Image (cartoon, rainbow, N blue to C red):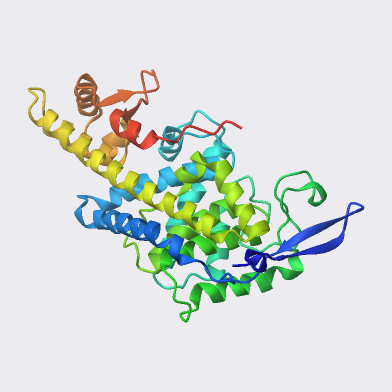
Length: 389
C-alpha cells in the first residue's frame, strides 16, 4: 500500500509580513488507498462492545439526565483544559451556582459556553442533520463569553490561521488558505452524508475528527468543536441513545500522542495508526464512564441507607440529599428555595449530613455558605486537574 497517495498537497501562499509560507490542503475523504481494516477489526469489535455496554446504561441508570448533567460538565471542563483553561470542576459548579470560583471568571465562562453549545447541538440534531449550518450555529454558542468571542463566532474564517509558532512562516502546521476552505468543507459535509460509503460509524467518526482539525475552519474553538463532533456523530448515527461518550480525558492524558497522530496522518498518510489510537480511546473511555456511573449509583444508594438508618434522620435530610445528587455544589439560600424548607431546617439538615461525612462546607463563612457533596465531587473530579504547560 502506498500511503503517500493519501497525503494532501502543500500550497505556496501569498506574502504575509514579507515572507512566503506553505499551507496544507488535505485530500477528500475517504482515504485512498482504502483503510486496511484487517489490523483494525479486533479493536473495532472491542470498541463496539464497550460503546454498546455504555449505551445500555441509559436504560438502567435510575436518573440518566442527572448523570448526563454532570458528565457533560466534566467533558466541557476537560476539553477546555486542553485549550489552556485552568478551572476545576468545583469552580464550574460554583460559577453556575452564582458563586465566585477560585479562578478567573473568563476561564469558567468559557467552560460554561461549551456546556451550552453541547446541549444546543444535541437538541438541534432532533430536527437538523449534522451539517455545516449546524456546525456554525454550535460554534457561535461555543464562542459566547469566551476569549475567542471577537474572532468571528459562527462564521468560517476568511483569513489564514496556523497552529504553533508566532506566524504562518514558523508554524508547526498551517491549515488550508481561506480561498480553499469551502471546497474542503463541502467535501467533508458530502462524506458525512454519503450513504454509499459502507463504513462503521466509529471509523467514520475517527476520520471526520482528523479532517475537521486539519481544515481548522474557524479562527478559534476548532479543537473544542472537533471533539464535540465525535459525540454528535455517534448520536446522529444512533450508536448512542444519549451523549455518554467523550474522549477529552483520553486526549488530555495522551496529548502528545494525540497531536503526533494528527500530524502523521497529514505528513505520512498514517490513517490506520490514528484509527487504532482513536478506538483505544473509545474502549478506555467507555469502560471508565460505565464504571463511573456504577460508582455514583452505589454512592447514592449507600449514603441514602446511611441517612435512613441514622437516629438523626428526617425527611428534610433525605430531601436535601436527593437535591444534591443533581446539584453537588449548592448554597444554603438555593437549598431553602429549591426544597421549600426554612433556613434553620436547611442548616440543621446540612449539619447532620456534614456529621455523617456526606457533605462539606467550603467557604468558611457564617452567612451564604456553600456546601459540596464530598465523595460525589471526588468521583467527578478524577482526571480534571488542570494541565501543566
